[in-house]
Length: 423
Image 1 (cartoon, one colour):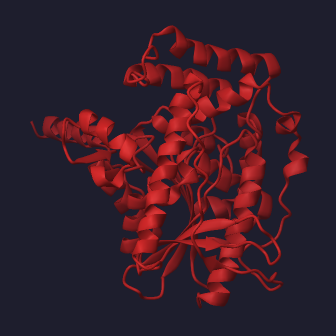
Image 2 (spheres, one colour):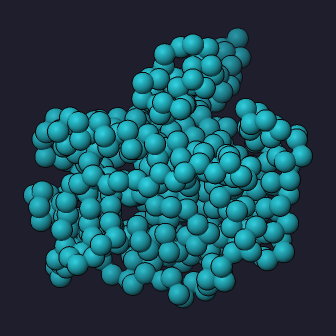
């Protein structure tokens, strides 16, 4: 829920600013050159260093808009957790087996960091495969925090290395995908050249929500699907901007998002005005993601062939109104094949599970967290039982097992039918 609310609030701020003309640029301006991603004969020299990064912590602004109070605070909270994670990592002496580490992939002579987060097997053994992960909007900027539990558990089951590619959200999904593909390629070079990974190591692409769409763009633009051992889309999302705003408004009211902000609870004027502003601005300037939902449908329809579809698995949750799995599958109706689908209990944010002690939180947040949790010393976000079912299903897919329907309602219906037959 926080993921989509934060994303909408970020997009609303862009809408209010009437966006940059470059956002509506044509698809031709964002094409990634077709070619192999993981076969790296002509390698550019670059340094892949495990190194700390200093996060800029902007001064609090008392005049922040309500949108910033929701979306901005989520990013700020994750950034502070990331900062504490980095400080703890340095205090423990840097790299430890089984921990996340920062891999800086910038080319020689460049000054801007090009980072990915690398998780290697906790056993210390050579990995059996590599997973390239892209998270959803906002939370995908800090994958080693937001998706840590999910990815660590899959990595442990599969003895896998995970390369989690962070990104900042904007409306231009082509440019985000292009940069993600570049980082994935450089991560392969670094892991093979400096860490001894064999070139034939199986590689998987897994994405959640917007991250699944970004992987789709990368696969369509570069033709790398044939080099991947598997493609996993968790809660694939291809919603348009206006639909995202409409859905976020209803979800926010259901969850009473913003009730802890004076004068900003669900149903209040500032609350409704935020979404009204975003909706009006989107309509006024024709605001839409690039590629738009119809364009994205055409891209996957023309670029995903039967071979890629055979190794593509969709993971769909029972209570997920932000899922576009059916829309993706409908693109291949009457074609050469369709992806397999695993059905699971849970919501759009099932892959996100955070379990924190109050000591893990920034000092300014401890008092509020203590009140929210009723004085408990630990707090968690997410459903661990549903997460574990997702971990099992993803691991089974990577092992070549068929898709399952793990939804409890379906099992109950099947049991009822069996009982009636026996009578």
